[in-house]
Length: 177
Image (cartoon, rainbow, N blue to C red; front, side, top):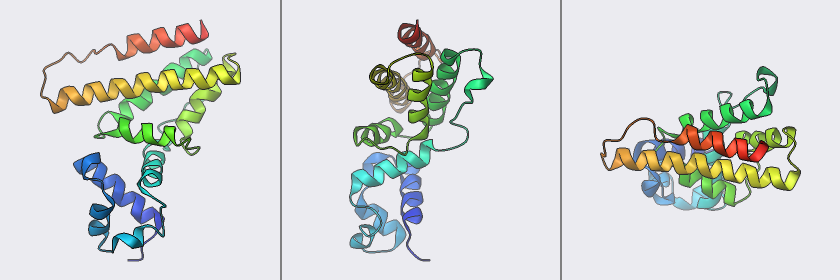
């Protein structure tokens, strides 16, 4: 099997899903692919770039997109997209950290994140405010996912209603109000 960027990223996603971010090292990835570590660097510059590509693969799916025309208002579309992000990331161990790295690197391939900003602009926010609103909502989604994952990992019995949707509705109302 020829080593390709897609193979490297697919394998990294598999390691993340099965073992978590702590086990997703370049050495572990090379071992899984049965190659020398140096061979990976033909396909990704460094681990941060790898994580950005993993984030893109996790997020860039048809399920993580909304058609604004299907909703009565931009705020309804924003709420739905944020809920989809939350539900998609929840079962993937350490996904909030991976997405945070990608957004900190200004990754431009994260389609749902870009759509979130576009929806905020369509709701009337200026470009700068839409960018800040995007970060606010993304922080809420990622923080809520991390919180829920920590409860599961610590085997803490907690109610399913964790305040995510309540906080999301308040944030969107405050942004678009």
